[in-house]
Length: 126
Image (cartoon, rainbow, N blue to C red; front, side):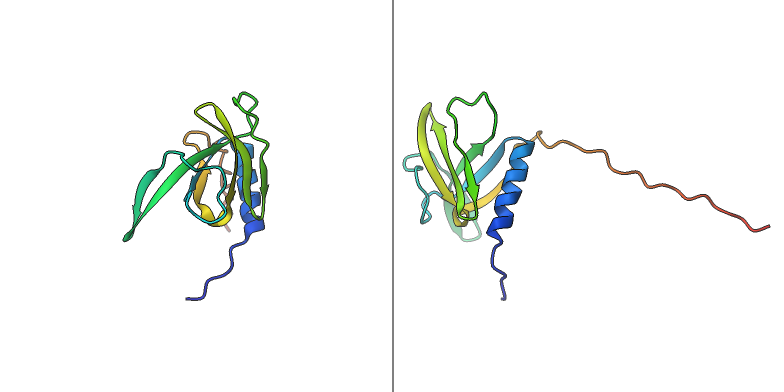
């Protein structure tokens, strides 16, 4: 199997783009090397193939009504932010290697109008 290296700069840009759309949920494997600030956070077990992972769901957004300013930094190494857990702020860092997936929260994706296909007129030779 020939795997291409992960484009971490592109991943960071995609994450930033989704943040411009709304809240981004990140599914993290908190026990991975480099993860900071998630000790003691409630996890959810997920079975993938023969393996079971304990995962954490983290929500990031740029809203002004968040209880703790998240001082978000996103780059090719990962996602750093101060997040609130039960009202207590924690400095966190999640390297991209610990991210299982990320997506916009349900219902926040704006549906953009799809371009309509212009029908060409038919010419008839008489």
